[in-house]
Image 1 (cartoon, rainbow, N blue to C red):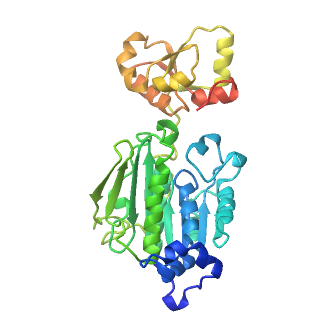
Image 2: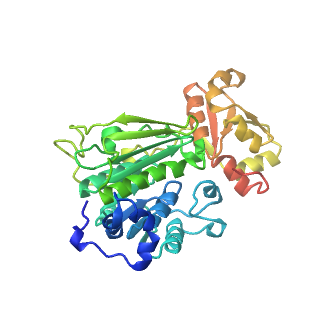
Image 3: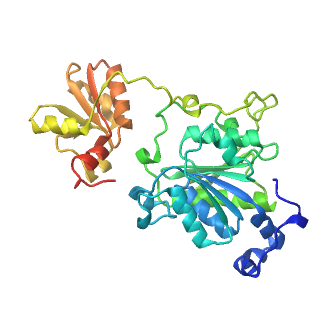
Length: 386
């Protein structure tokens, strides 16, 4: 930690003494700990599910300077879990609105807004000068980017991730502890791990994981307790159970090992297999074209590869439901020579279905671009959305 020594710590105003009185009553924190929080600069990468409670609790705790990185805009589906926003924020910059709410919560916290994507070109310049970086991202390329940038800059990385009913948290780049690459040396194949938009997430789950991340951040800044470095905390909301895995620094890690080879940031989209992807061999169909063909009365086979509970929310009358995991067992029902139009919520699962169909010898699999989300947005605006 690059915080000043006790003699150079900022003083607390009478208002701050009152505001943080419950911290001051904790001998482990006390006035010196609160001063260290005031002196700290913390960068939150991502202002979504994890970033919302991260920003709120870090500001409430008295972190003196908060940086917020996010290029997205607030959408209605965010409000189920991103408690930093309300309906008045819809369509507006997440980073800007997060900063505005933080300033309303605690005017003593200075906020720097980065309304942009974190990339290999800007990560080092954005992160340099911060004492702690808290990772609130939801994708593998940015997680590796945050990890590598923290390693090159020597900044602790407070990691958290969520999916459906489960979460993880750890502290990387602290002391002789491991980094994210020690836990996950290689990213998973593209599409193997569904996003929250595809797989869903319990609304309260981010609050639990983000609270753990905030706790670890406060502990590092104030120098109290035992950090999660070298440990991966696993949370299962359905079982209401925490488990812990011991982690060790990989001495052969290319970033934090004994002989590191990573000296600069790379193209993380390419590293995760997401860049320069070739055009798929199967055809794609827009929702507008599908609507035109249906209006002409064309006979076609449309397969919805979502789950039954999604079908109950909304579906195309002309489609038949065969969840992706069951599709292979139903292939005998179709002619491999016929055109087979498949769709899901947004297009990811149906792309996997096209890949499966092609591997099984089907000549004309077609992916409905944008899935039923695009249909509800562009064709049937009265359709229920989720």
